[in-house]
Image (cartoon, helix red, strand yellow):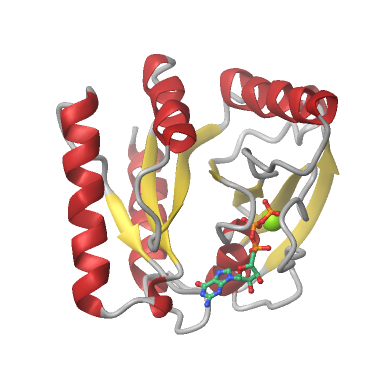
Length: 202
Ligand code: GTP
Ligand code: MG
């Protein structure tokens, strides 16, 4: 799929104020600094669309971007960022959870995992929350450019083993990406395109 237009629509911290339009929506979630905003920019070939930063905690709101005038990509704040106060963290968490529980247009979410790290409890718990609430998601292993192919494969295998040992019967659909080399761009966009096409025929 070719992305012809990608335009910022609105930012807010309340799911009730998100766009009312009934078009398919795909969101990006994961720990702060995992590369959610960078991935959106990579997918849309627009380095300035979503704000990125080397310092965790850059994205603080629910940001809607309209793609090709007929679906949304949504950039979300990260979870697990230690340097914000407990109160701010609670507010973040409650509006993120409300977004997932209440956003009817949400078709699929991408849970981003830094491919360099061992499985982390906070990510496993978040996927558990999505599963329990029947919210469809895929996994995206980010920053693949930072690892050799061998280590990358080993880390993904470790992740699979961990999730399957935990409580998942199958490993979710997953992608491997790099915002710097553009690895995974076509696969993610093809997946979204396929889902969008299927929705049209429902
Ligand atoms: P928050 O908004 O704070 O939750 O972070 P985020 O998940 O949106 O991360 P962001 O896209 O802002 O990227 C965080 C840092 O990681 C930035 O310094 C990016 O340049 C870097 N980064 C993101 N993706 C990649 C990648 O695929 N490869 C490399 N090498 N660096 C990346
Ligand atoms: Mg961000």
